[in-house]
Structures are given as C-alpha cells and as structure tokens.
Amino acid sequence: MRIYGNKTYSEYKKDARGVAVALGNFDGVHLGHQALIAELVKIAAEEGRRSLVYTFEKHPMEVLSADGAGKPRLIMTNADKARIMEKLGADGIFFESFDREYASMDCDTFAREIIKEKLGTAHAVVGSNYSFGLGGSGNPALLRKLGEKYGFKVTVIEPVTMDGTVVSSTLLRGLIATGNVASFPRYAGRAYTVPGKVTHGRAVGRGLGFPTANISPKRGFASPADGVYATKTLVDGTVYDGVTNIGKNPTFGLRSRSIETFLLDADVDLYGREIRVAFIRMLRPEIRFSSPELLEKQIACDVSEAKTLLAGTENPFTDL
Image 1 (cartoon, helix red, strand yellow):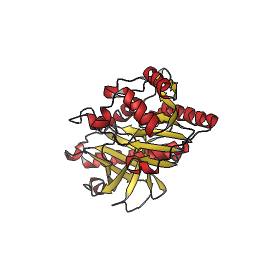
Image 2 (spheres, rainbow, N blue to C red; image 1 turned 90 degrees about the vertical axis):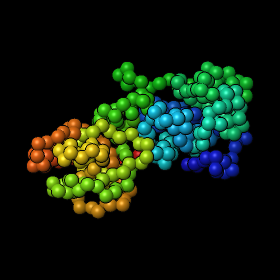
Image 3 (tube, rainbow, N blue to C red; image 1 turned 120 degrees about the horizontal axis):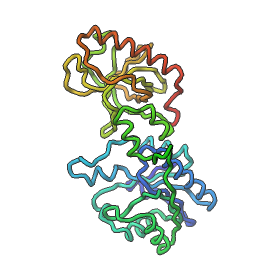
Image 4 (tube, rainbow, N blue to C red; image 1 turned 90 degrees about the horizontal axis):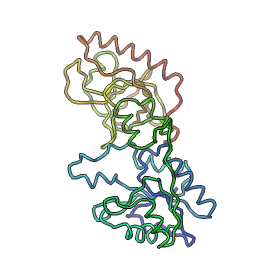
C-alpha cells in the first residue's frame, strides 16, 4: 500500500483513468467502514482503477474545538488504520492535513479542488451520513450533483446495523467508555487495543506480589472505564495473557489515574518498551478494599478468572 500526505504529495501520481476514492474519517475502521471499503475495492476492480482511501491526519474536531471539549477520544492510530485498509484491499491511503483553512472551503471548492483536481477522482464512495465543506454543510445528495458538474461518479453506502443498532465510531467510543470491551469486536471485527510505552509506576502491584507495567497510552486515545480487565499484551511480536487495572487504586488512597498490566506466567522486563494491550473483558469494577490483604486475595481471584477466560481467546493482534 502507498501512504500519502500533503508533505509527500509530489509522490502521488494521478492516473489518467482516474481513481476510485473512499471519503471519510474512518476512526476504528468498524464493520460499516469495512463495508464501504469493500465496495470501493469492488468498484475499482470493475472499472480498472486504483483504490484510494482519503482521510485525515488529525480528527477534524481536534482542530475545530477551541477548548478540546468537542474532541473525541481516538480509537486507532493512523499506522493501524493504514495496515487495516491494506488488508481490506485498498491500494493507497491519503492523510489530509486538516486545518482551519481547509475547514473553510465551501462545498463546490472542495469537490473541484480536492476531489477532482487534487486526487483525480473518477468515482467517489461515501457513507450515507458523510458531510463535507464549510461547517459540514455538504451531504451525499449535494456530492452527487457536484460529481455531475465536475465529472466523477458517486456511490453512497447505507449504514451497517446489528440488531437494529447502527454501527458507528460513536458507538465504539461508548462501549469503551463504559468498559463493555467484550462487545467491541461485534461491531469492529477486532478487540480494542491501546498502544503505549511502559514507564515507571507506583510499584503498588509489586508490593502485593503482582508486579505490573505502568502504561502511558498514546495521546488522545480512548481509555476504558475504571476497572479490572482480562487482557492480552503484545511485546515485540509475542503475545502474553494478563490482567490490567485502570483507575486510582482507591485502597491506597491514590489520586492519579493509571493503566497497569500484570503479565500472567511471564517474567519480562517491559520498562521503556512500546507495547500494545488488547482489552478482552471487564472482570470487575475498581473497588476500595478495607486492607491490602483483601485486595491481594481479590487480585489472585482476578488472575484465576483471567487465565480461564483467556485460555480460549484467539490472538487479537492479527489485523495489526
């Protein structure tokens, strides 16, 4: 797969036949996104064109939200997004540098300067809720009219629903925020994973006989609700079963929130390493115990439950 951006636009070669382009943000690349990309790849093959995914380097709300209040927590890194798009069959992906000047383009200018002239689009594929142009004022119906004006086709994909629920990035963020990570794969096709670097922690787990790795997640990533989770951790290509605690360790009266992972049946020095944690299921909410001894007993129960659960769980990192 070829990866492009404005800094490498000189490497982008427009095809005289035009390209088939999927337009959208695609955070999480959930089942709805996957259906859209499948249609893109199908159209490209039928029409003899290259397929390109056009998305953003940063989430638009990261730029448009002055105080960060409207900025959504990210589900996926751009590198992961590119890897999954490649597995889905896309030939290339373009990460646009979204800024306020870009956001100020009216719909007609966007269709002409970006879709037609910059990308060389012959066929655009979008979801039914796709918006574009100044203030997101454009919709698929308008895009079709502009496509007729500037010479590109438009295919609109209807949402994917599961049991009457529309699959969306907002839905995925809600599952993460409530700790319902067990349902995440149903809508995304894969477990929710958080990449991060292992840093020095507070050594609370070590004092209880369960040494943990303190994880500093990628900035802006969505974090599951406070609680204890059965997890799998990817370290230099090796997958380890584990238990991960998210929260403030209320038994010890600590105030800062942390993500700490304990690897089961493994003694691996993780400090300073980049790792990835896949959240399989919440075992319990975070609880304040009356003594460290009671907490230690509960952790032993958590570990036993996680071992049983994870024994039948497949590698969640195969798509990444």
